[in-house]
Length: 326
Image 1 (cartoon, rainbow, N blue to C red):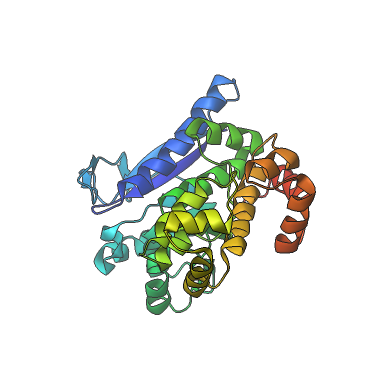
Image 2: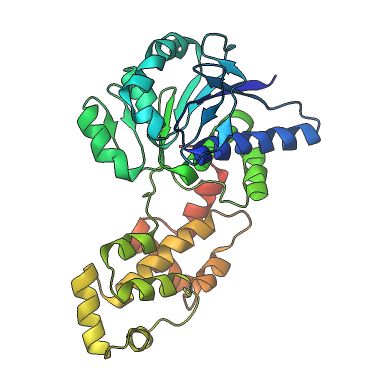
């Protein structure tokens, strides 16, 4: 039996917060149907009124139905966008959400779609996530929420909240896995050319981006270069030359800027990338170790266990075999 997914749309929504999750479920439905497994999902857009809404980007979307006529929903997804951050808009759906909540298995927010659920009081006392740029604002405006600013997505009971656009797709893949198992979720991820899942607790910034945010000087270019060449020899001498410093001066400036030595930084980046690659089906510890620049799997395994507290093989097995989305 298919599950009906509703998407609430409104003037001022972020188009990708809607289209990314919508297409994720649409691909799942197409793949399931092609294998004669039945229709996985029925997708419906729900508006305040029947007229078309205009996204922040200017794109127009016409709702399939309205909040007054919406059918029963298995899951309701609320995208983010400037429009819902206005109290008058969020307030208009508060009563509707409160009535719907007891009979809706999952209520999901993408990015600042959390405002809809928060205004309705449905997230009070719950752990939540949102886009990192709005985390402190959400904390101030809704002090009863337990905001986890670094999480990609958070599940608390039947409520799911996520960070920005890409995290919304991560969450939808997790929901598909929750509904139909890891195989369909993996196939959808392959079709969309994205990772099946990043851990829900993973920081919203990638490691290279975290360090680029801290610096606007020439080191930011070096960091981007390192991230793209993890499989190569990345000696302090090489990095210093590319940054046009002497090795000793480069090491001192780098440590002052980032609090770690260049070698420590490179190892951290390699291990974070390795963690992502270990989650890819059919990966091996040996191949991953070589791909991120470790001399052999033994050196890699020691470094990985020192940093994460478990062996690469244990991490790989538990990550790939788990059917738990969060």
